[in-house]
Amino acid sequence: MSQRYLDDCSIDEEQDDDERRLALLALCIVVGAEQARLLRNARRRRTYLTRPELLPNPRSDTPWQALYSSHNDRAFITTMGVDNETFHYLLESGFSFAWDTTAIPRTDTDTHGQPRIGGRSLDAAGALGLYLHYISSTMTDTGLGEVFAIIPSTISRYIQFSRALLLATLRNLPEGAVRYPRDFGDGRNEFDAHSELVQERHPRLVGAIGTMDGLNLPLGASSDSNLENATYSGWLHSHCCSCVFAFSPKGTIIIAHTNAPGSWHDSRIARPIYQKLDRETPEGYYLVADTAFPRGVIGSPTKIRAPIKVNTPLPQDEHERQELLHFNNELISYRQSAEWGMRALQGSFGRLRLPLDINDSSARADLLETCVRMNNVRALRVGIHQIRNVYAPIWQNGEDERLWNGFERLLFPEIQRGDRIARFYFDA
Image (cartoon, rainbow, N blue to C red; front, top):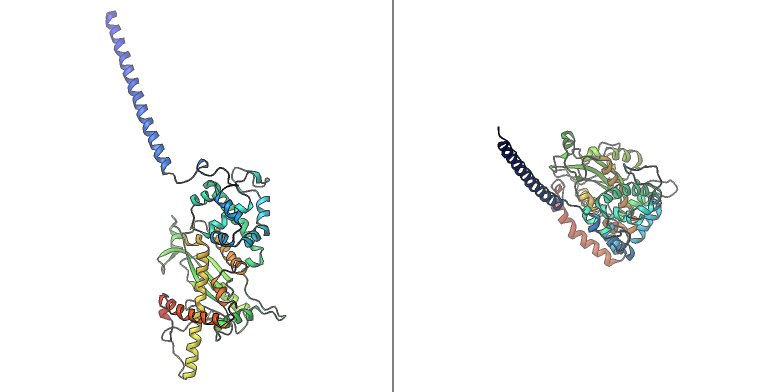
């Protein structure tokens, strides 16, 4: 084989190597461009904010700081459900101290270490404001991030931490207590006080101390079929958790049984309430409920009163018949206050209108307890509650009384016609 032939072969191999390198380089360029395009598209699809897109300092010149600095009751109530005075009352009743002295739990830090107050994006007032914004609205993390100038991961961490601090604070407040009426035996009888408020509007309801009803709150979906089945309500055709509440004529919740599976009937959820009625309620006092709650499962069937069902036999005596019908109409009217109470819960705490986490029962229970206790704080300190405004003795003159009577005649017939169980009532 000649030397010239070998040289020609060597040149051909070098040319082939150059072509392969050029082809590989071109392929790398194409792949790199495609990866860059996919990365840009992925970034565009991400729905969260980062630090550069937010205001530079969460502790100054943010929408939250402007709201907080205004000290305006209307603005506070609109966004957080409490007035300025009540907000600072919560802050000074333990929330601020706990925020400043407790380390925020994190997986990458010592949970028993000293808190780094200066390193936090929000102070105690900002953290309380964030959580009250969260439970009082349906705002997303993006909206909260724009208001408080913090990123989503910080929002989630602060909400979880603030939930525990606020709940601990509310448990120590007398206004946040969920307390059944008591007879102190020294002339102070809360059963009489509640009944007298009811009789101001419904004279025949002697002994009525409150109204009771069930509330179903929506839940998200779960991959666990057993959990899905337990939370499915055949009545609503959806997944939910069930609660039963009893409201006093002051608008406060005096009994609450929450976070039960949606497949349970109200009467089953209320079994602990039946025991309380049987053991702690003197004779002659009762709760007003609808016909979903049985009246004969406790010691005395008179501890729960409900409107008369359709086709219920009535007394033959005309006087007794008319008196029973008048009593029934007042029961129906007063039972509506339970609907007002449920509306106050879901209207004041918008977070309850969104599907709750089906897989985190503990966090859901804490949220529900916080909303229940905050309802009582709002009713007693802020005074904005439909039940309290109707049944508390704030209207004294004749003009106000005529206003109430006209309102009752206008409202209750519409309510009864729109009530999905109204057809089971005897209406006269």
